[in-house]
Image (cartoon, rainbow over all chains, first blue to last red; front, top):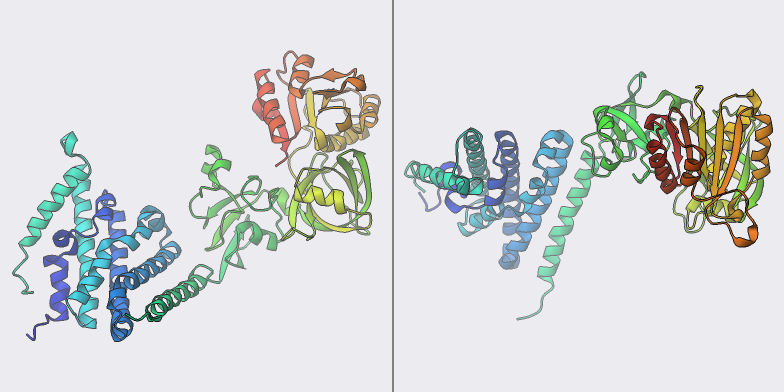
Length: 196
Length: 366
C-alpha cells in the first residue's frame, strides 16, 4: 500500500461501506420522493450511475488539466456544476429518445439530478482525497451504484410497506427516514470487509 | 492581487465547450434523420424528422385545417395518432375531450416528428388540394366587410359542399414574418366551380383580414387550399334555424343558393344578427330567397339600432330573437356561424329550448 487505495477497493467500498447516501446522507431529496415504487427508482438510480460516472471522469479532467495548472482550484465548484448540468441535459435527451416511458415517469426529477448534491459531492470528494483518474472514475461509478442500490432497496421496502399500518404521525417521509437510518445501521455491518 | 482574465476565460471556455457538445448531440439524437409515417391504409413512407406532424402531413400533400397556423390555439388540426406521438402535451389538453383522448386524437401541430408514426386522418382531408387563384373581384359590402371573388386557373374545377371553407394563404408583407393561413367560408354556390366568393370582415390587427382590406387588388395571385369542414346542410326532414353573425353569413349564402337551385323544401329560418344597420349587407339577396326557396324565412336582427335608422325589424341579441320566434326548438337543427361568443351563447340558448347538442352544427371564427 502506498497510501492510496486501489481503484477496485474504492469501487467496492463506495458501493457498500462508504455508501454516499447512507453514510454521507447526500442526495436525499430525490431519494425520498422517487422511492415509492421500484421501477422509477431503478430508472433514476441508473440515470444517477450514468451521470456520476461521466461527471467524475469529466470533472477529473477539467480539474487536472485546466484548473490545477492555472492555479484556479477555487473555481472547481462552478466548473463542476456546469459540467454536471450539461451531462444531465445529455442524459435527458438520450432518455427522451430511447426510453420515453421512463422519461415521462421521472418527470421533473430527471433535470433535478443536476442539483443532486451526491453528484457534486462525489466530484468534490475525489478531489479532496486526491484520487487518480482511474480511481476517481471507479469512485464515481461505485457511488452511483451505491446510491442506486440504496434507493432501489428503499423503494422495495416502501412497496411492501403499503400494506402495513404506519402510525399516522410517521406516514411518508417520517417512516422513510427511520427506514433509511436502519438501513444505514445495517450497512455498517459491511465495514471491515475492505480496509479503506 | 492582480486582476486576471484567466478565471473568466476558463469558466466561459468550459461553458461554451459543453454547450457545443449539447447542440451537436441534440442534432444527432433529436433530429435524427428519417422516420416512417404510416398514413391511414397507405404503406409506411420515409419522411424527414424534426418538424411538426402538421408540417410533415402538409409535405405529404395532406392539408390538415389549421386556422391559427400551428400555434395550438384553434384546436382544428386534430388527427388520430396511434403510434409515436408520445404523451398528450399540456398545450393539447384543453382541446381534447375525454372521448377524443380515448380515440388517440391529438393536435397535429403540437406533435414533433421524432419516431415512427402511425396516423389516421379523416378521408375527406385527402381530397383537399392547394390551388393558385386570381383575384377577379373585390367589392365592399359595408364599412368593414368585403366580397372577394377568386378565380381558379383555366380548366380547374373546384368541387365543394355548400357550407365548407377554404384556407387562404397570405403573402409575406411588411411586419409579417412568414406566410400565415386563415380560414374563410365559401359564400358562392357549389354549382359555380371555376370561381368562389369569400366574405371577409376586417378584424382589428387580424393579419390576413387586414391584408385583404388594405392590400388586395384585382389581378393579385393568391394561394388557397380546401375545401374543408363538415358544416353543411343535413339532408333530414327536421326544421332548421340558421344563425349568422357579421361575416358569418357567408356559408349560409352558399347553402341558400344551393337550396334555391334544388328547390329544397326543408323548413329554414335564417337569423342574421348585427349591431346596427351599418353592419348589414346582402339583405335584398336574402329576401329574394324567400321567393325562390319554398320554405324559407329571413329575419335580420339588430342588437342596438340607431334612432335615425327607423329600424322596423327584430331588435335584440340573436339568442333573444331566436327565443321569440321559437317557443320550443325540440326536434329542430341548429346551424351557427359567427364569433366564439355568439356561438357559445346560441348553443346554450338552443339546448335550453330542447335542441339536442348533436343537432347543432357550427363554424366558429378563431
